[in-house]
Length: 312
Image (cartoon, rainbow, N blue to C red; front, side):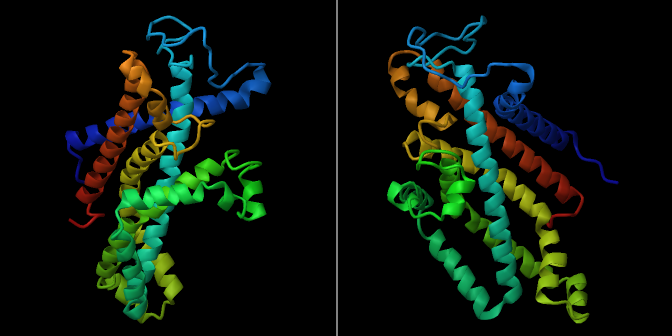
């Protein structure tokens, strides 16, 4: 068996450790809130404390990373913000990769006019700058007038009593990001399926009379799984950056849901006042997350290509 080079192993391990630490930080508030009734813990979300504003980072409790302009503890804000940013990134990537691969596989397998029509729709959306499409969709979907017309079962499932409650802000941001990120996955999947259609195992399945559904589910989608994982890791970082940008512009998860992007937005005044930590710490975490995810994706891609599971 061909062994991986130490460099590739280092990428995989470093990326996995970095992402694992971030996920652990994101899940800590959720786990503690679930354990709160069992152990009698008192876990409070970040609250404003005007008696301790703009405290610099120190090695002493309770404000190890300092506070922001309204007295929020930055350590708590970062932990709760990690849950918001990472959940949006992971969910957006999962939905985008699934939609893109299914769309591209169906188009390539159907061929003819159906393939042409489906891919022209993708090309039309790709012609629109992604930032314009993202801002337009997030603005439209977050409008209270539109939310009022959402199906009642959807609002109930999302725990919504008003347009800023429950999981609705997550749903809107994930939907807007997914609409701009699944297009490239569809094109990659279509190209991959077109090459698979010329391979012997696929031609044999066709000769044996496999149906359209069988060809898609048993032969094409499993063959796309490896490239889909690689695409997914890269889309996670893209989605996190997009969510941060939306939150910075006030179109993200909303003021009641912390995220690293909203922390950057709130810290603009801190930079001019010399309180750099309120902006630098969440900014560094965004960079660290993107770097970890990219290293994980590149290492996984290189290892699979070395084993011949991804064509060179």
